[in-house]
Image (cartoon, rainbow, N blue to C red; front, side):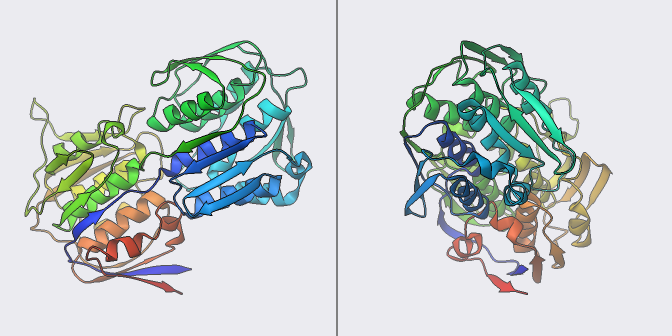
Length: 437
């Protein structure tokens, strides 16, 4: 197990750019299964979750050609469906949450998919009902194998378009139902669809492949099924979660940092939310300049009540950002309530922040009250273990701002979402040493 040894209290100075969006990459890579022609994806981040998904597709028979670490071509012209019934497939699927999104394309194109409980962060229950109910509306049937704990999903009569009201605006659920619908016979209407920029990007690559989709950017999508799709080339957006991570790091370490090529128009409410936390940002074209500040002071609502940051479906605040807002709030002047609605285990890492000296009350599994005293209550260095990607990056931000040297174990969790984060931050003044325990 690898660790980071982090020297805290160092200010950063320079420029850094976010890499391609991880969540978008997982979707569009799976979309390559919808055609036998070549699909090229550029601006791919070289991170563990992406590499593992590519390896899984290669095991399925997809031809993978890597131009460089950030550009990969996929050709799914010889898929081995028997592999879906293998023990090896089940093991690999359980190690990667994004693997669930291969099921929609396989069901649409081949009439068969196998789904076991996918892996990913241990942040509470992450149900798959939205995926299942959407596929059932399209005509899919399910057979559960209690021995292997897998669902065999088939469409013996082919998928048929239908009206689908999703039970929740699930991003992966929406993506899976979209990918199943583009080859279904007739018209599919998806209501209460997630409309995050990454879903919009998925729709755009599918349209470039020959799909017919209306309503992109809204929660009401209309899809006219086509008989086949062709190849395409697609470039990923910058990762908004990386952008948020770097904004938080710059504020916490009292740094002067320019974030380049952030994809500002696709960041939604996030920049304004950081401003409400007291962080001043200068927008320069598609760059964000975070200037060094002694104190950032939390805003309050117009009626004077405590500032609350809560996750919500797009264009609301992404749940992946709340861990970052929480740790940044510990050094702000003012109080904040963090309300993590979606996942019941994502706030449990606050015990380590409390150990570091943060004033936080964990109200329940979904809510934490942060009492910030500005810089009068500096965080202290400590040893900690990263439980998931987003808590891991929050811990790294805390360690970089703390007095002393901290150790973060299980950093493979951070590596799943951030490409060589230690090297990129060291280049602008951090002191992070990677060790193998």
